[in-house]
Amino acid sequence: MASKDYIPHKDRLFHIWQDNFVNGVNENYASWDLPARAATEWTLLTATPGTKKMRWDAAWANVSTNNFTRSQNVEMNDARREYESGFRTSDSDTSLRLFIKRYLRNNPLVTNGQRIQMGITIPDEDKSGPLDKNALIDLWGLVRSVDHLVHLIQVTVPGRRSRAKGRGVKDIQVFMAITPASQTASPSLSSFAYIGVVKRGLMIQLFSEDQVGMRAHYYARFRFEGKIDSYGPPSSYWSCIIM
Image 1 (cartoon, one colour):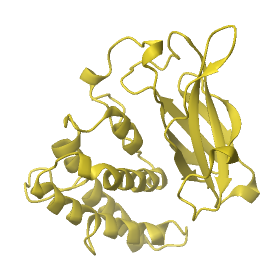
Image 2 (cartoon, rainbow, N blue to C red; image 1 turned 90 degrees about the vertical axis):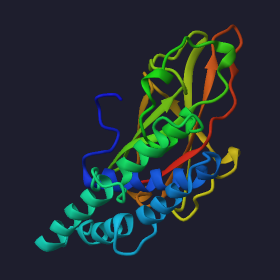
Image 3 (cartoon, rainbow, N blue to C red; image 1 turned 60 degrees about the vertical axis):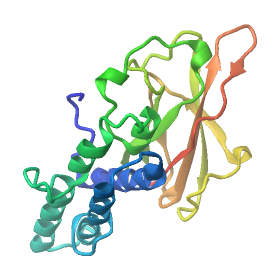
């Protein structure tokens, strides 16, 4: 595993990350052929009142208002420890880290694209190999971090360690559409506008105050080198709320 932790340290970014992770697992779970025990753990982890995710969500709802008591802050810290780490020496307990270690990290049915979608680490043994222009069929993007009026966007070529664009690639273009926060489905392709290119896999997108609370939808595509520009297909879509 890379030395940088894949789970954000700041509570606000952790809340965004864990929500994205849970949605990613729910979306892809059926394709992983996990044992019955995993389903029991997932229910405990995400859908059991008073514990794990549901405990964290309730505690975060209090503290995120910035008008909270000391006991509410203590409860949030305890809830995060239980949800994120759990009791690693207990086979009957689960947590985000334990679930990832037991069922996702080295599962060959979990694709690198799905790992990127969920915001977890790609194992080192799957990150090597040269980039062949003719094999460029998809990109995976996510909002790596969120700040007030700022999204840090990361776009990755699945299976490639380097953040360099790769042979034959002129640049990687990013497109965005803004919708109400309640619209989680991606809008039509014609709704998107070009907003720039990534530099070594990263791009900063700025917003205005009147866009706070809305949802930004993104996709990326390759532009290939040549006398006449040619393009790859749109990537999978991703989205994030504007804070």
